[in-house]
Image (cartoon, rainbow, N blue to C red):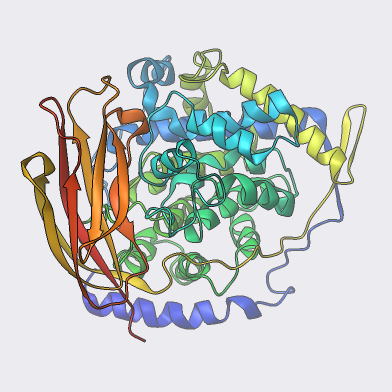
Length: 515
């Protein structure tokens, strides 16, 4: 698409987006019933469809994950889908692929063990002490928790440079599936658990996904699910504006998903504060990847295969995004209506335990269904024999919170400096700074590097950096409270040895956006 077409699309979408809030009820009815009556079997079928759809989606996208950054996956590139034991084979050869599922199961299993009133500290400690490896916001939160900084501080942006990342977005499915037709109750669950690892747009990603799952029990129209769930997100937030752009682009060009993708690339795929993605095509931002989920859902138009394919072809986190899209559509359809070509390759895996859990898909279906029945009763509904009566909730927006104020990256310099060779000093002229780096050497030695951080000669921090990959510090140091004046930042390794290396990778400087 040439630049003139992109600009024309943006101008058109700006007009359409400004009219989203004034769509009349007569033109686009979204009347939610006060009560939803659903059979137990149908409720169970929908919950199964959500988990199955998510598992199918992440498996389908597996060969493409982060291989296509800042680009669409062309139609000429084949994305395979197998038969028979296809999902089982992936679970055996690449168990880490299924973080979308086993991360959710950390919280599902904790609810199952401790009940619906399980304290958030129990959730946080289960997450922090789990056996799986983590990255980005999740790993930063794990480090924070294991070092005494509990939720919600563990996910707050000044304590977590990755607060706007996708992490909670891929872990929030359970909250919607246990809250059928109750998006506000799902948001309450997300408030406590989502702030373990995220804040702002990163938290909104989970709230929005959970709301779409929740409303998938009420509506069978994808566009209604997408638009109604967005009412849970404050309209003035960056996240809401991004998703609103996708909806507007769809209404303007309903047959061309690449037009919506191009719009997102132009508006939402740059100047993001995540230090990993600064000035490179890699984008783990929740808003952008949520947009790709929505593109898959809207342009897939209820077709399961087309939905997961489009969400995958948007690129970036292209296994997690079709997982979310497949799970939401699977909930709308129900397990029994997922096409056999997609469902049959899953069935032999349904009794397999996911790595790092004690649960299989069949266990998960049961736990999630039991938790949904409890949530329904707790929120004014009832279970009478084969019929379940749910008191429906009209979506209301959660609180407004935005990470990183108006900070955007302005410089990223790579150093690859080994602190074993001596202190590292760098001039900083910005409002904030993030220093990336890592410990190399014997992962199982128990070694913890101690890095002294000085600002203009004054010690401001002593950073502990474990060599153990599972509990590592994801970034060496960050400071979001600089004054925009020039400073000298110095890092010194206090306990070097002959086995381990401590390396400064890059220094990212951020400044406030000029209005």
